[in-house]
Structure formats: C-alpha cells, structure tokens
Image 1 (cartoon, rainbow, N blue to C red):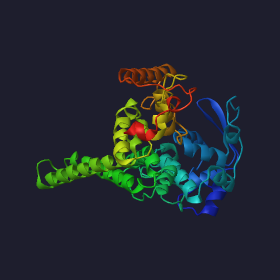
Image 2: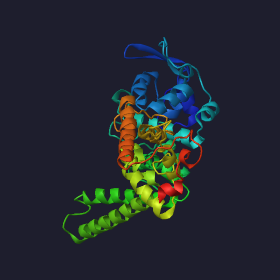
Image 3: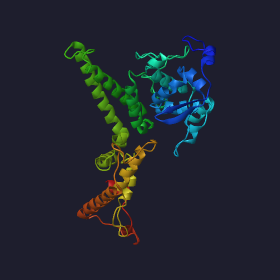
Image 4: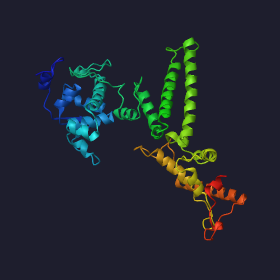
Length: 386
C-alpha cells in the first residue's frame, strides 16, 4: 500500500513499514524500535527520513530525550557513558510520571519537535521546503514552536502568581530568569506584593524600550514616541521607588540575583545600626545575623581578645544562600558571586583587625571573665547601644 497525502490514520498506519527500523547517522548505526508510531506522530513516510529526523530532533535536548524513550531510538552499539534510561522503551504514562509532566506538557514538547522537522525541506520525499510546518499527519494539531514557553518556566511563574502572555519566547525566558533572581524576596511575607510589582514594572520598561527602538512602530520625534518615552521615564521612577522600599523591608535585597559584595557587610551594617539605635529594629542586618547577634559576636574579653564575628563567613553564606535553590548554581561560574577561601580569610582578618584597632583607640576595656563581679561581665547590649 502506497502512502498518499490525505490518508486517514488507519490507512496511514497500514502504509507505514514495520516498527523496527535501522538507520545510520554520521556513520554510526542506530535503531528505531517504534517507527510505526514515530511516523504517525511526526509525519515520516519512509525509514529513509530517519536520518534527517534524527539530525533535526537532536537539537532540542529535552524533546529529543522524550522522543528517544517513547519511540525507542538508540545506538546499535551504546557508548560506555550511555544512560540506561535512554536505551529502553518507555510508555507514555511511565514517562509522564517520571518527569512530573501533564499530557499537555508532553504534547507541547513533541509538537515543538514536529514543527522543527516540518520546517526543513526534503525534496526527495516531497516535503515542503518553503518554511511552512508541513506536518504529514492529517489530523495532527498545529505545532507550536517559536512561541512555545517551557513548562518549567510556566510553573515558576505560576508559583509566584504571574500569569501573562509574552510577545516572544526570548522575552518569556528573560522574565522567568528575573523571577528566579527575585525568588528569595518573593518568599518574604511582607515583600511579596512589592517584589511582584517591581518585576512587572521591569517587564513593562523592557517592552517600552523595544517599542522605542522600533522606528517602524514608533518613529522618534513624533508625539506617540514622546508619550512612550515619558511613560518609560515614569515607570523607571516607580521601579526605583519599589527597589528602595524593598531595601527597607529586606536589607539584604541589594544582593538579589547573586550580586553579593562586601557592601552587604559594611555599608548595610552601618545603615542597620542606625535603624537599630533609632527604632530597636531586630531584622537581619547582613542577611545572616540580627543586630543583637552581631554585637554579641563583636564582644572581646581577656580570654578572647579578638571578636568572633567573621565578615568572610557572612559573604560566603550569603553567596551560598543565593544559590540554595538553583540546581545549576556554580560559585566559580562567571557572573555568580564567588570568593576563594584565601580571600574570605583575608576579610575575616581585616574585619577583626579594624574592630580591635578601633576599640583600642577608644580605650575599650576587655573584661576578664574569670573575675568575680561587674569587672568580669560584658556590658549589657542596651548600654552598648547607648
């Protein structure tokens, strides 16, 4: 039975060769255990198309993994580092359970692979080469490719109450990354709404920038362009105000997106000391300790002449906290906070030396804790504050 365009599924299934098919990619022998189902899903009409399908599908790592497991694509001679899960057949229900997906999410991944395959012309098999989808499965849903938004990103946005459509896939991926950067702040009970508003404002600013840079949609100098520019300026002020308020609620918010620095240990500590002295504020000062804890750690005595507060430890813990929920976090990767153990040790030493020098200059008396009475006691925290 010969394949003809417009066949119904039962006729199409009868026209497709047997399930098990062998093919070659770059001289390497491969096998497809379920070619009949693969052909129905992606519109292949001949085993000769397997090589082209392989070369296109492998470019989408996640989709390729699902295709391999569902339809049994595997090398005839597996390499030593091959994943065992990629060498056996999976049922759809089993794959959905293992990956934590819904049927719709799995179908989106397969549709994206189908769309990528359909866009590539193959004159030998009559496949369209004009850039259209060209799926040969008559009743297949129209594949979504460029505007498909990865379900993991959708879950992230939904978890924090964001629900919107993006003009491009790149815009959606950018916004999802910004939400991930703000995730620690979004989890703070009193900062959630403010953080969400700041992120939405940042998205609008990005969209307005794209509009201002598009001379066809918004010509520079015209009234519309000036109005957009004014709106962009207003949003920027609103955004800066939101960041200022976030810094008050979350003093460590300046370290968002992993941009931790020694500022969070010095200037932020100074500001927090002012807040504590004026209002008795006991929130985290440096992202790790409260004011009272820092004051206790900075005490000195005859038995321990150096303070116990470690600035290097604080920087290290803040950096680690930023990557706590990121499975791909790598402190050595460019753009992520990272200081070597030697640099952290220098921070510890610099802080202790500065505090000891300042205390000695003021004539600070270090109590002897082995002496009975007031001479052997630390000053009360309230006395230190005053």
